[in-house]
Image (cartoon, helix red, strand yellow):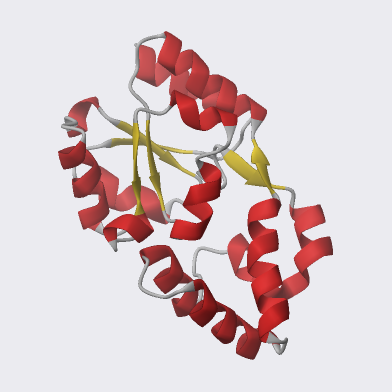
Length: 187
């Protein structure tokens, strides 16, 4: 979801949360955030770790964690793509690394109604790019890897999918990538 269907305005992001979450711009997140996404650390535990890392109070760290979610907005080009794929008869699923607390809010975005299901890391206690989370998606929704297209903004998350025979496309640009996905999904 993040970086593909929901985006962050990094200018506003940096202005509001500063450098405390600079890891969002990189492929490698701190272990405590991976554990949060995996559902094996609570928000309070992550706030404590973030407070120590960022040298802020627990209250400030909790506020920063909440603000990350507030800074997400739908990417119009991708939301339009999902709607068009559904109209073309394609099934669409979410495979996302995300804490439970965030998922509860993400489900409220209007685009969520277009998805046929989701595999969320914190519910499965698995993370992209671990092979098992892709296997879980295929199994849960009875998907044939050869007939499945997976997109992600992080190239590292594409590798395990490719190893399972899933077609992949790197989501590099919301202006051009949606048309490439639409073409591949509907041919």
